[in-house]
Length: 98
Image (tube, rainbow, N blue to C red; front, side):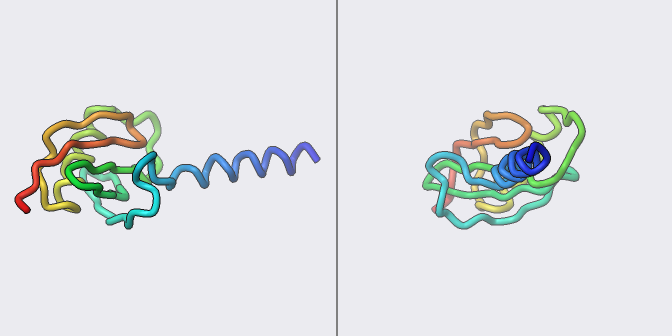
């Protein structure tokens, strides 16, 4: 019973790794790669979020942030003005030409 509970808890945590953040659920994701990382990027108006999909042992925030910025810009066609978050999920304010 204990093993089954541990398995279910681990499965629930892993399933949440690809979940869109608050305000982005239901929006289609664009897969983008940059700096050795893979992101699912979702855009909502002049904002976007990047959910990192690859496994990385203790990734540097600065390196992941730079990669997320590039991935967001590639996926949206917009410039990322600001970037905040953590190595798993980053959000950007966008400046879009449209």
